[in-house]
Image 1 (tube, helix red, strand yellow):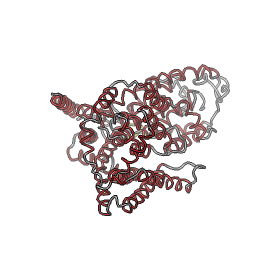
Image 2 (cartoon, one colour; image 1 turned 90 degrees about the vertical axis):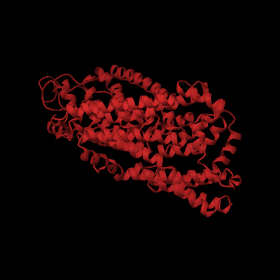
Image 3 (spheres, one colour; image 1 turned 60 degrees about the horizontal axis):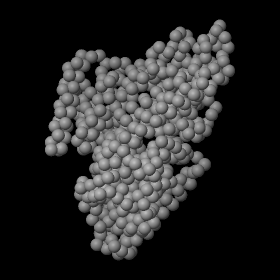
Image 4 (cartoon, helix red, strand yellow; image 1 turned 60 degrees about the vertical axis):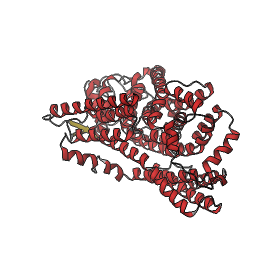
Length: 594
């Protein structure tokens, strides 16, 4: 009966979307192409849907259908297809080219060297995890660890502790901790949905708080560029560290894990999963998935060392490469971090293969077959990630992020800047499932707004990072959400459904916190924050107030013309500029360039 209702709901939703697409095709058939501002310059859009509400349709289709059907593959594909239809204005051949092509299609995301690095990393990881499972190392470690970890609470806290300690990379974090701790949590009847939630809450939220991770290096690179443009003397590293106490979403996501473990009080769908597993063990679907793991006949010979030694080899390899690249004295780019992780996993897999062959746990032929099966088992997760990248790529083509920002830009006031940037970041990251893409768009805008409105750069940076993290943490089409469900052995949609209530709780609390700090930091600032009174250097209205720095007029005009995506120009044109030169990069009310 439930399956029948699900089918009815699914096909109803598909029908509604089809009717909507037909209406859009007829309505926008003769609509002229809009002009968008990119990097301060007017650019003719490729489609009339660019920068409109309908640019949100691809992620809406993907998310709605995935939640209804609990099936991600077709949902993501249909989201990509809808985006391609809108981009190609419903022309059949152009739609196929847009869906597959090298501009914004599947080929474009696979042609990206960073994405290919992630794929190679995941394939290597799949080989190692499958070899650990079939060789009996994971089970042996679980038996050993379960003797030490006596309670459900201790198992959850140990999982969180490992997640915090392995802060190098979000993928590496959740996949490694999942492989190590899943046997332990299973022995204490902790649901796989709860394990996936803990993995998700200690991967990206940890990485974004640490300066020496790929996340930290990426963020500091954007900060450094904007600070240099604005003439701000604070270093990018100092700004990042100052923002850490205000990254409310990341901090609350981490704090919730021990609170729930210690209080033993779950809520929402998670409470039902926990109660079911306590009484019955893993769900039927999870047990069916486990049947694909067939251990070697001699797996009983395995000990915990078959997991511990390969992991030690992996960590030594990774940190040796880091030190060779200047760690901890300098930041390591995310691309190099992924190279080190892949190298570490590959060497650990070779060491594990030698161990199981020497101990006669597996034959050479079985090891090779396991490597092949490990690659095959990653095919599903790779398909989801590539399709999710496709949805994000088509959102870029349709100007989804620009639309979200333009919708909220007119509501800005100094006190609301942090809270509003958090909301904008949360919406963009949830819709596009990319935290890094959201940060690339919003950090330049946020830093310049902080400078112009006289609010704290640290709080503004933190608000952007928190909003960007929200979507990465809980969006159904986010790669780390997919990774966490896979590492926990949990159905992907079950993980999304059980985690969203916790994520929303942290998001609402973060929004309130940003409202509070937005108001209090303005009250504490000299003059209450905000732009200075009219007048300044070269004006008859008076001198520039203390704390503001006058910039040469031609400098202001040059920076205005280079304004990222024209977003600050949109801010001025939304009613925040009264008169005077176009100094929108810093102030919009005709005051000196500050």
